[in-house]
Length: 297
Image 1 (tube, rainbow, N blue to C red):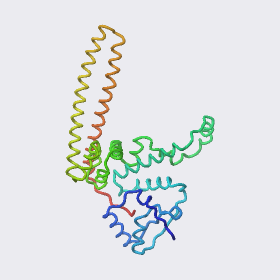
Image 2: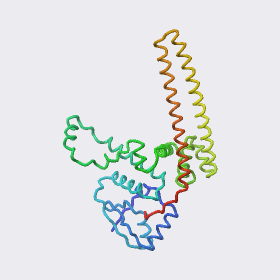
Image 3: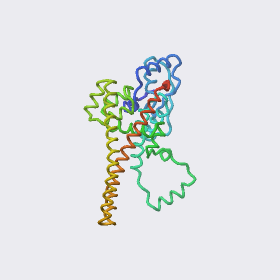
Image 4: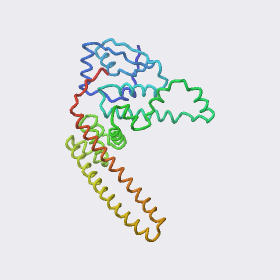
């Protein structure tokens, strides 16, 4: 059998660590390759590590064709779902995979033409007894949807999104290596890229210090925001009283509208900071949990 290994698919999921690969190799040498390799035609979709180990040691293996793949997108979505369900995948990896799945589904929906009103009405009436498609059941439109798919909290998803968008490659590598927590990495990701790189190259201690500095600045910002809100409230009351004495209708409404926008923005900032602090406390508690054993990959 001529099995084709595409580097794109091999690299689509983060590789095993050396320890995980050694454990898999010992398992296959002792028990054989228990799980069949998944193929799409001649293309290897799942089982790259098992395939490499079996070829290295000249061991037999089984293959199975996946009957429902129609495109490389289908392959990617299937690979993501398989790894989201594996215990050996880290919280950060699951979050990144769920975000990747959301992007694929969003692009797929964007390519679909919008039905005309008459077609949409006919589709609704005809499709009433039908079962929803897999994509419709897992659209991942909201942060809560992503959190459920990745078995994470909403705040963890928010932090992983921030890392995914803003973190330097060196900082991402440190998260994957376990040198820094998701919460701390999200804090460091708010720094300029060069400062992120410097902290990551400095090792665990430097990363911790960088995260601590960012949190101290955020805490000061939060305290300043609360003080500003108090001052604004007092100023609003004074301005409203003065305006009422001269123009009892229009001026108070304008003052409340402008101040209200500022207050809402400051309150949202405080809520975001409190969510990050809550996530940090949860991560400290989760460190006590036993690390799961990696299955065959």
